Length: 147
Figure (cartoon, rainbow, N blue to C red):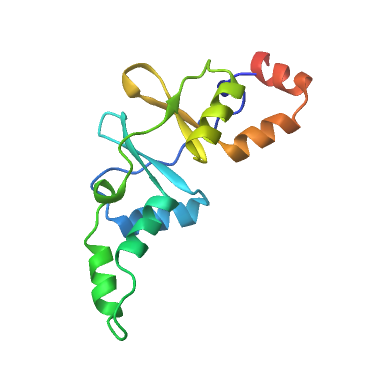
């Protein structure tokens, strides 16, 4: 089984200049825990994850009692580019799924971006995608692959 057999191809993305709060709302509304950050050409330049967002909370904690407004204003001033992880772990469509899983485990990440030529985003493979793929039969996978 390869990454292409399990990856999500309709990926929610965000641009680097989006306010952090907009990206957080996108993650919440889409029910995802990470967003690839793409430039105007669709090339991956980073990833924004829940972990990146939590760093902001740690960085601004503990807020002074009664000073939530300062914390709120500081959060609004941040962009995705300020918080994103720039060193994105990636795989290709034809990467064996076992290799992608090993990479996720070794790096302790929940997802890998799937890149095509020139760092173009082709999809994302997450731990939940992998579990769902393992639950499918070989016949189901073959039917999906060859119609």
